[in-house]
Amino acid sequence: MKSHVLRPLYVVIGIIALVLIIRGFIVPKDFGVYDRGYMYSWYRKSNEDEWKAFKVKHRSSEYCKDCHTDKYSSIMQTPHAIIQCENCHDPAIDHPENPPKLSINKSREQCLRCHSYLPYPTSNRANIKAIDPDNHNPDIECVMCHNPHKPSLEGFKK
Amino acid sequence: MITRRDFIKYSLQGAAAIAIPALTIEILNPSKLFASKDTKKVRWGFLVDTQKCVGCGFCVRACKLENEVPYDANVSRTWVERYVVTKDGRVLTDSPKAARDGFTRNDPAGINIKKGDIEKAFFVPKLCNQCENPPCVQVCPVGATYQASDGVVLVDRKWCIGCGYCIMACPYGVRFFHPVYRTAEKCNFCYHRITKGMKTACVQACPFGARLIGNISDPNDEVGRIIRTERVTVLKDEYGTKPQVYYRGLSKEVR
Ligand code: SF4
Ligand code: SF4
Image 1 (cartoon, rainbow over the protein chains, first blue to last red):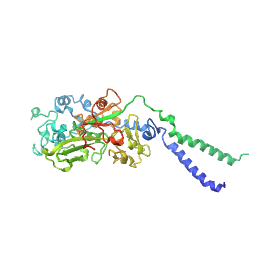
Image 2: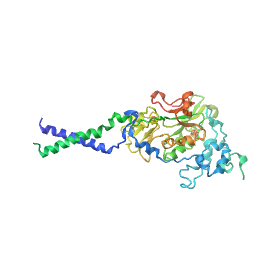
Image 3: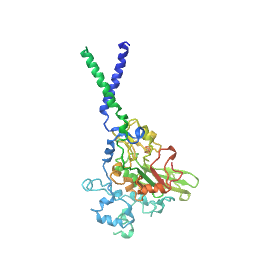
């Protein structure tokens, strides 16, 4: 065949080859097919480690207990023992170094998450000690009367 | 006699002929396919108890803070749905702000229902099911969404091109675009925590034990034991995706 017919073909093949070669350099070595084959595990393996290295922010009450022993042991005597410190005080992250002081959520809304009465059968919500937010001292913060670390009124000192 | 011109030409052709297969066929190499197979088997699974959940939303709050999902954006990796079934057969559901602030009013979907009219009402936490046969992974054209050997479906932010196929393919609607990274986003069972032996942020934050996570291929695992021995359900079983988030006490109204 005459070369003027084949020449465009060579150009196309050349471009394809070039693209494939560049691709070979760009695609990382660990991008491949793993345990479950092409349909489910075709990926860059090192991404697993990138996700593992993501920063942990919530440290759990166990982390708080050594420095805040008094607070920890008092709340452990109450029904609020099941609540993580970080649910009201924000994630500890690198506390105490950074952030040195954690915020405290003292809002009425925070307490109403569980203690606003909802008449829901087939849900444990109906069994929690609860109030009607429209009639039980509306407009004042719950912490005015209740200490979240010792929520029963007997534990409340003026 | 070979000319200098021909010599260069043939050399280049020869080099290309060697280079192309070496650089491109690699991803098809079957010997690599099983090379990384992990022998100590881990399979992460999740258990949700709809009776125990009280709709406080601490889990959603913890998830957003832990996983850097913008707190006020209307997207979330996990959410809690409220179901109120009335005596006259209506089913009202809602999940305002993904239930980030909990449920404090008896106004499902903005409608006030009298206590006497309620047949049943409960809360259903939802999250990515880390399906055994994940359609989101099947459709991803670039291999950015993938399933790790422990069953968790992860999204590679460097490779995601934001085409949104996975968002369309997931029958559970658990995926969204991350407003900051602009890549596909979803729950990954707090991969940074479970791989360090910690609980997911939502499991840790839940005061009522409504959420549990475990290695279900471990015979001593509590979640695995409950799944094997008790009556549990999964969402949309008929799709064949084999979800690995199991529900206790799920009723037929939940979709
Ligand atoms: S629930 Fe949706 S996003 Fe999660 S693995 Fe299944 S298909 Fe993928
Ligand atoms: S923290 Fe637990 S009880 Fe509260 S909404 Fe979430 S799953 Fe339900």
